[in-house]
Length: 260
Image (tube, rainbow, N blue to C red; front, side, top):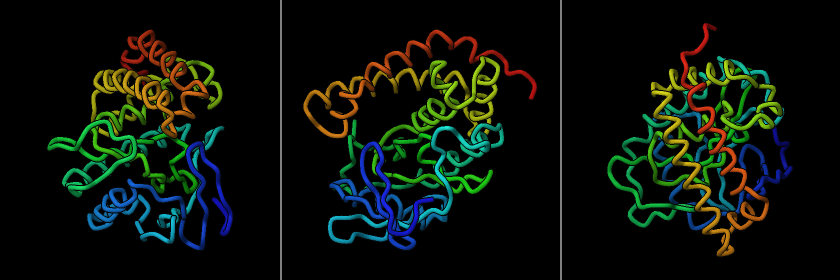
């Protein structure tokens, strides 16, 4: 866990811990994100930071105690129990957020389309690096600055993409999770915990990868950050390769999982 007074540099922004709070540069999206976090707190959803306002140019949120799942992943995330924890967390988050109605003037970072009935506010950055663990228990998710209107299944697809992981062999080997059987069992465990069909999740992921690639190319070419950085480091090409891998491996991922 980040030490009091220390800073942590992510791929998009730098955060700083002050006591039991986390500070990061605020943006035009911050009021909408804080309205979302306020709603979650009022709904009794405790596994997300609480919005604590702003301090000068920084937003202030509460600290979640635990360790982020950076690479190489901790044992908890490599286990079936850990992947089930992720699916249950997302199901509970979506239940809590479903009746949230964004403020009329809400601005969201990288928003693709306006909110309308039937949508939720997605977390938008559901990678293991934003999951916080206390031993084998998932404390919650941090870094809500990419929250935006979208569809619930896209959140689950993004989580499957990065936490199964549904990625080529190099990324699997980095997390010591390889093999058709392992990936298939993890996908089915995640979907069972959320109560979703794996085929629908893979369809949503294919579409999400297509849109994210196009967004990086479009906004990155205009010089808009952080997409310009994503474009320069090759994220668009990487996503195209991962979408190709997904299509090639779709059938094996959807076969009936082996007994645990």
